[in-house]
Image (cartoon, rainbow, N blue to C red; front, side, top):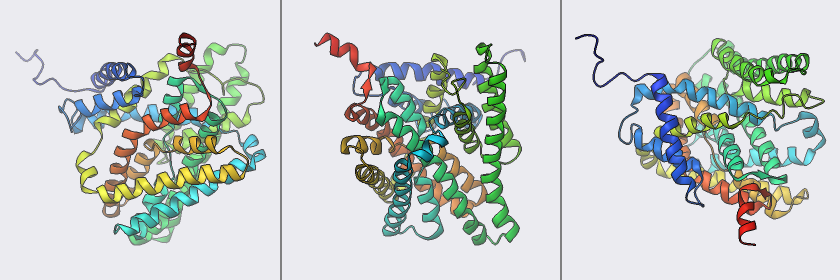
Amino acid sequence: MNFLPSWPPEINTLLLFGLLLFGGALGGYFAHRLRWLPSITGFMAVGLAVGPQGLGLIGPEGMAQAKVIVDVALALILYRLGLSLDLKALLADRRLLLVSLAEGVATFVLIYAALALVGVSGVVAAVIATIGISSSPAVLIHVGHELGASGPVTERARALVALNNMMAFVAFSAVLPVLYQHNDAGWAVTLGAPAWRLLGSAALGVALGWLLHWAARRTKRASQYHLALVIGAVMFALGGSQSLHLSGLFAPLVLGVTVRSLEQQSLIADLAFGAAFELFFIALFVYAGANLHLAEMWHYAAAAGAFVLARGAAKLITVGGVGYLTGVPVRQGLSAGLLLMPMAGLAIGLTATTLNLFPEQGAAVSAVVLAAVAVLETIGPPVAAQAFRWSGDRLAADEPDKEIHG
């Protein structure tokens, strides 16, 4: 009876996508019923339950198949984040640049010093410290959308997260030559490979940004096609990066920055993705929960703890302190600093790059960073929700309650 399916049935990408969405939606709903708990926590709890660390419904092979879904979700989220960064406005606001630069440098220095105290030093600590500069755009965007947050802190945090991720990628590219030298690579590879990934990804993002802007202007009388143009450009950035051995994380981010910076009038930079965009957030965070490495959290607890504390202190104190010196109220500055705490997508991508290129050093980098990501992705959503509530920004989600209670 070879017409019958094998048992257990084979897992495919569509089945996984359905499981991620259906289970994640239920988890998000139950979390949403608890006022203090963001839905992201529910998504991740479902992922942990069905993943390799839980019931095993999604095994290592399934995780590999689901990665394409996560890559698409991250690319769209990073494109959307890039839209929050207008280079013309940024050059006019030197204070935001100063805060971002100070925060990035402080984060690198404090993480490097903290890791040295627990026995992790040298080039491995330097790579981990560059990765620590990055922040999670998905948590910021999703929790902000869930609360209906709008105001100066929300906009400032989005710009800072975008700058964080650009700075992290540049710093990571600057450290790569040292890793290549440690592995006895020739000078052509040592200098050429990092430059190709950095400059090539940036060039691809800029070129696609120009193309998307041109297409949007040509079709401005038929705005019903704009969403398809945007998603097509993001898929071009992701697929082109894979074909050309570039970064599928940096190119979509640069694409978004380019589109925002080119627009003179609103065409696609303010385009709403609609409720369907929620699908990608759900899939991303269920996958993140399934990918939590509990054993590594325990084994590298000291290094991960030092990383989390040093990174948190650097971002909170620097954004709050330097922001205050440049005229930002303390409460707004500290709230923005808290919104930079979550760390996931870019950090995981850079860690995977290190592990693929340099297995020996990458194993140590992966262990510490993934343990830290597990902690930060667990505490990040509740911290972000509290930061939004503390910031003083308008929260549409709270307005009905205010009316009810007078």
